[in-house]
Amino acid sequence: MEKGKGVMGSGRRWAVDFSDNSTAPSSRDIPDPPGFTRASVDQDDSTVSRQKKDAESNWKAQKAWEVAQAPFKNLLMMGFMMWMAGNTVHLFSIGITFSALWQPISALQGVGKVFEPYKDSKVELLGPKLLFIALNLGGLALGVWKLNTLGLLPTHASDWVSSLPPAQEVEYSGGGIPL
Figure 1 (cartoon, rainbow, N blue to C red):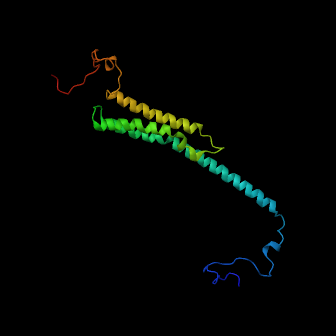
Figure 2: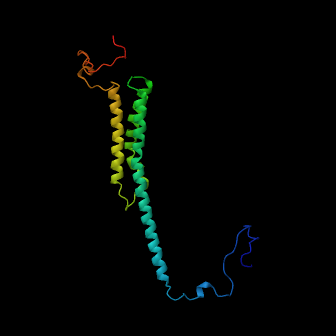
Figure 3: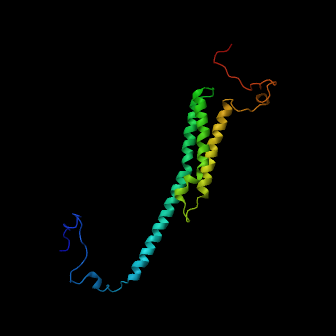
């Protein structure tokens, strides 16, 4: 069979035989040029592979910090939604508040899974994990604050004992018309 021609009879219609059966000298028989050694190629390969590993480690560290900072965007969005929901107890404000509580709790439960793709012996994940936890705890505190402003947290003794009178309102706001 000629070199480079397709094999037609073996069932594989477009298979190509790349074996060298010619008698001409091949490139393996040509000596290396002056100043070139095969060891330098191996050394360059190890340097290139080390550079690739360093670049991959840097990329993983950068992505870990990006993932750690992601709850900050969620924190700002949730704060704006809570502000838009107002301070009255109705279905929308309660839904937003419980969403603000649930998202950080579920994120804190999955911290290990979130940072699993970035695990490497050269990548330090303690800082990004601590930032991720701190931002999610901030989101949780925002949700608890909203529960308090809605009056849904038991913060007075009268909330626990029915015989005590409710706490007095400290501040009262009215309309713009004097009575």
